[in-house]
Amino acid sequence: MSNTTQERRKIGRKSKRKGKRGEREVAKFLCDRGLSAKRTGWRQTFGGTGEAPDVTCGDLQFEVKYKESNPKRLWDELGKHDALWLRRNGMKWLVVLDAVDYVRLIGGVK
Image 1 (cartoon, one colour):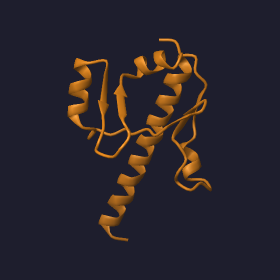
Image 2 (cartoon, rainbow, N blue to C red):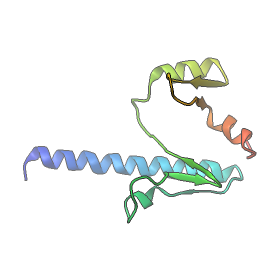
Image 3 (cartoon, rainbow, N blue to C red):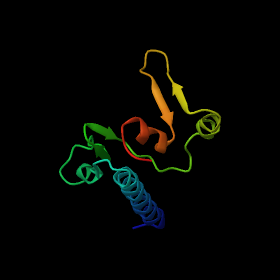
Image 4 (cartoon, helix red, strand yellow):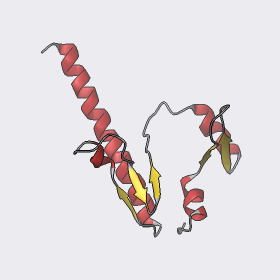
């Protein structure tokens, strides 16, 4: 096995661990605020189709992205407002808001 292949595998494992950590953090954040949330991302790996959500909370399904490369513009705009609404032509609206505000909106505790 070449060094390049070994390096890619190492990066892949590190990325997966980071993703799992993010999923656990989101589930814990929601549970700590009185919501019934659980990490379900493991289903993608064990017999799943890859379509399973990372975290569920009641009927809500969440995809968790734990990346340093999230667009800086989103963070900048959100710092000025309570929520950021985005839409591309022909697509549905996307709302970005602080997690504490989101939990408050869906009925959890700060």
